[in-house]
Length: 174
Image (cartoon, rainbow, N blue to C red; front, side):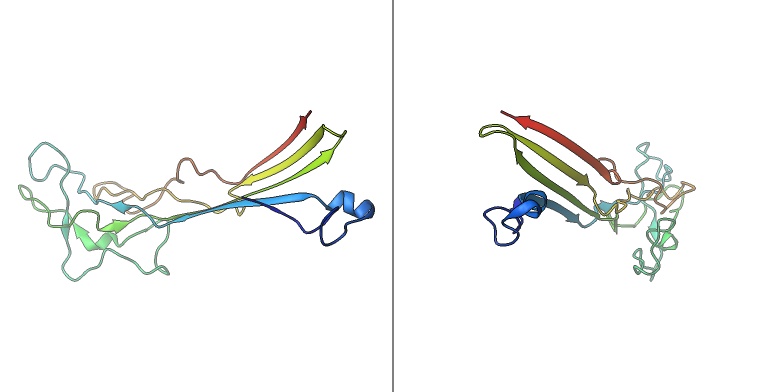
C-alpha cells in the first residue's frame, strides 16, 4: 500500500513554491514480513536401527531440554546439543518428531516514488526500492544430524531473503 506525504501542491504543508515542487508529491510504501521458525526433526545420522532408511532419531537425555534461552542461543549452538545422545545399536531412538524450532524470518521492504509532470499527459516517475531495508540477517536452519561435525550450528542464511538490495528506476509514461 502506498501513502501520500502531506507535502506539496494540494496537500496540507508546503503547498506553494519551489520547496513544494522538490519535497511534495512523494509516495511511501513498505512491506513487513515476520514469522516464527519452522519445526526441526533431529536425526541421529546413522542407521542404528539397521532398517536401511537412515531416518533414525536419537535418544533424549532424561531431564534435559532441547530448548535454550535466547541469551544462550547463537548461530554456533541454536539448540541444546547435549539433550540428545546416539541410541544403542539395533534400537530406535525415543526423541519425538519436530522437537526443535529453527530461526524465524524478519524483513522490511521500503519504497518511495514521485511523479514529475512533463506535459499535460506525460509524466516521469522516479522510484526507489529497498528490499530487506534494515539489512537484518535471516539465518537458515541449523544442522540436525547428530553425527555431523556442525550439529546444532547454523552455517547459512535463508534462501530467497537476501541482504539489503537497493533499486532505482526512472519511467516515462506518455
